[in-house]
Structures are given as structure tokens and as C-alpha cells.
Length: 235
Ligand SMILES: [Zn+2]
Image 1 (cartoon, rainbow, N blue to C red):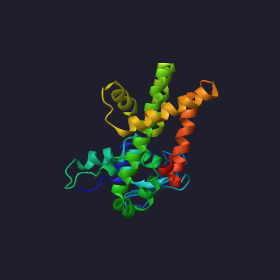
Image 2 (cartoon, protein in one colour; image 1 turned 45 degrees about the horizontal axis):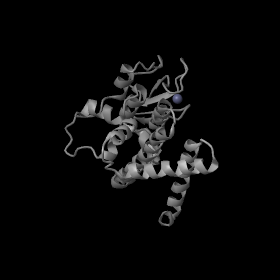
Image 3 (cartoon, rainbow, N blue to C red; image 1 turned 90 degrees about the horizontal axis):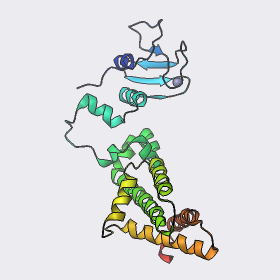
Image 4 (cartoon, rainbow, N blue to C red; image 1 turned 90 degrees about the vertical axis):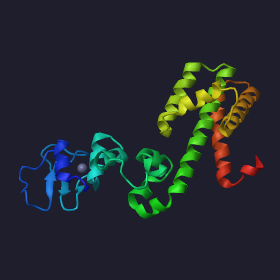
């Protein structure tokens, strides 16, 4: 099955075409859905190549991306809509990450600019994503443990939800709640989270204040920094 026609997709998405377009032209002009004011036809659609480009805001891409950007669906979702699930090779985990998830681990630019490198790097991308999830769970778990020294429970839950949104890990709160309520902490991040929480509690005790949350974030950045510098062994 071929890609859907970009002109047809644009019509379905209610993009307004320039009434002066001729049907047999190589390029059709329309109002840009990303920057556009009505009656300014900055968006150029190329039916032969099935691509779009806005001469004003420089948005550009293929037909599937156009639909994904406008509807808010993920690229993979739009692809499935037209091609179903019949591929020989199932999608690699790295291909299931959304653009925003790729962005937080620093791979979005590569995906957009260097498809070949992106494909070669699937395993590294997944390792980076798992590392990101690990660090975020550790931090969220440490926050949760501060409830035990008197931090307000619903405030902590709100903080973890904010963190979940910023990290693009929708299950973050569930992940740490489940771990907390299980008898055995079966993951390393839970123990590291506990260590982080206890360190923050110690610092607050010594400083004789109640800024455990601030110390938590500070300590985390410090260990991340040392980790990046290769000093992790010294800790
Ligand atoms: Zn535009």
C-alpha cells in the first residue's frame, strides 16, 4: 500500500487551500496550520513528493508527519492507521518512543536529521531511555519516602505527577507506589532512592531545617554530575 496523498490528507484535516491553485500544478499553496493566518498561503504542498513545507515558519515533513502534528497523534499511530500492523519486523522499542520522549533523552534531532544513524542506534537509544526511566523512578521514590519524615502526602503525589509529565513517563507514580507497597523492593532504583532520601534527611537534620526536598534535588544533581565525570566509584 502506498502513502496517502498529501492533498487528500490536507483536505481531511480542513487545511484551507489557496483558491488560486491550479489542479495540475506541481505545488499547491494553503494556509499553514502551524503559523498561519487566514488568507496567507505560506504552506506549500508537493503532491509528487508527498511533502509539505511552510515558507514562513519552516515547518516541513512528509504526509504522515503532517497528520501526526495536526491531530496530536504519534507518528507510529498515524502509520498504523494507513499500513496496519502487517510489517514483517515488529517495531523496535526505540521506534515506539514519542518525539517528546526522544527529545528528553537527546535523540530527536538525530531521528529528524539522520535516519540512518537513528536506525543504527536503536540499542543505544533504548539503553538511554531505560537509564532515564531508572533515574526518574529513583528520584520519585526518594520523594515518596519523605512522607515518612512528615512531608504532606498529597503534596508529594503532586510533585511526582509533575515530574511524570516533565519526564514523559506516564506510569511514574504507579511505578513507585507499587514498589512502595510491595514487601520486597525488587529493583535497584528503590534502594538508590532510599539512599538518596536518607542522605537528604541527614543533611536537613544537620542543618536543623526541613528542606529535605531541596537537598534531595541538590544531592541528585551532584551524583549525576559525579557520574558523568566518572567519579561514581568514589562515592
Ligand atoms: Zn508556517
